[in-house]
Length: 308
Image (cartoon, rainbow, N blue to C red):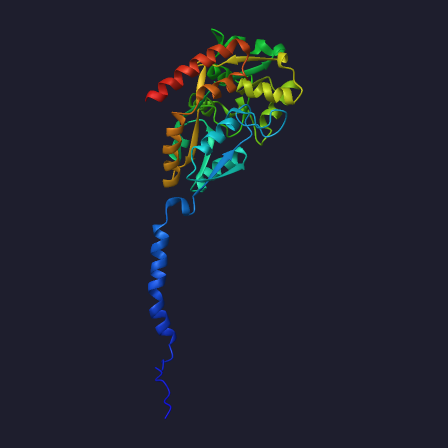
């Protein structure tokens, strides 16, 4: 008699049983994900906030992309492969708002001041720049004569006099020393302009005789004046008493765990980057008689920083 081979009958598997037997595989997958090396996981995205600020960053025109910070950015990005990097063009107000609100954003060209230091993490100095000064038309030089002390303008006395308005870019920091003077000045002593073209508008007002004195960086003023077809020899630049010849620019990041970690890594890069190349780039924007002094001062400054 032919017999059928014995067959084991399988009981139907319930959804509960499948779930019970499936959880070890899900646990294994989770453990495998956690065990992946750092490079295989998603990188944090660092948002770089860039403002049109010649000669540091230049968005348009014949020197587009040739600013000092424009040249520094690829070095910083190459030295920080642990992050994804996104470049975002912003105006002054939007940039500060992003630093306030975004957990991982950095501005590569910000001045230090006490107010911002309460909510921004700053790097060590990244660049050296000439200090701000006052610009008048050649024909208006006499308006500053009563306030000159050894070739420098006593800005506090000028503002307190009340007979001359000084044009400033609204919401811009000019460095802690000048910011304090401006905050103490009578409001009627200042003409503030807002917007991306604020400095150009101030220079246009000056050219039309509606404003005699403008506060700013001489290299930036020279650049913007040229763009507005204002001849350089129409203008005269005066340093301000108490500012010193040069000031530092910093990288500033959101004051968050990610931002502070990035600043620590940026500081390591800034101690080893070729500052001589960046110094040469900046010096090219200065008057020939100022270039040698700037290069020597900047060289000594960054050599000392590298040893700290």
